[in-house]
Length: 331
Image (cartoon, rainbow, N blue to C red; front, side, top):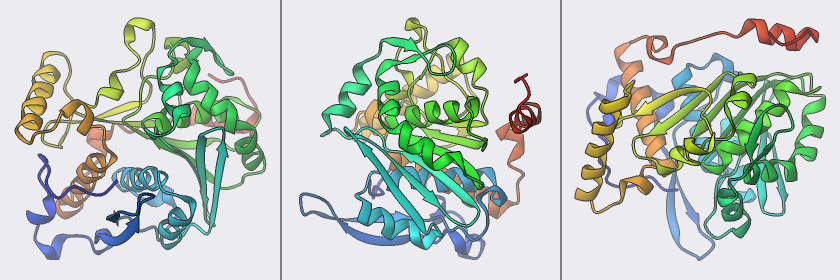
């Protein structure tokens, strides 16, 4: 969870003049102790001085990426990192190895689901249990991911029933799959508050086509080059991705490439990883690489004054939001 000293991706902090780097993105390094007694540097770049809705999509992406990374830490260290971001309410949901955090301030409430931990048998079991089952909402979903959410949902639901703050969901890896199911349940349930947006990083496929078409959330789904987790479970089993995909190429740049072009880019990433003695399929899944690439894009866009909406493909779902608000049939 520490930022690597070297990477195949370029760090724009070395390319952009200091005067143009936003002060709010100055990295804040903190030394943390792991469970085995090892010390490492943990870096947080985000600053939250306004409601999350007021941030650009890139700033939101960076914030939720860092919160998803922080969620891997123990509760005491999580509190240490999120309180300076303005989250004065922190709660851990933990049952049978399934874990998620609630972070809240005066305007926002964020549910961040924790991803796979290699030493947690419950997480590994959830990842490999790829049989599809009937979802709580509509369609079919991955049984292992659904089980993880089932363990936590009663407690999460209690916290959301009377929520009057802007609601967000996020997660990395298994946490991304769990956040997708949680947001879908909230979206289609009796809970009054509508999920504003869902941000996932390195998330596997969650459900079948019927499920993803019906749970039409505002979902930003980040995919880093050869990240192997984003290609599982296989589409051959009927699983499909949901949301707006933002693909990071082998150089850490945001590109819209498909088919043969994506195959070539993945091959470039694989060769680049081998030159650094790493297996790209696994190293590209690390949360640090996602954070570094998104941070570099924030620097680039804010220093240049470019408009980010042309690549984000902004799309407001006012019809479905109003239907939810006034209890009308979903369009």
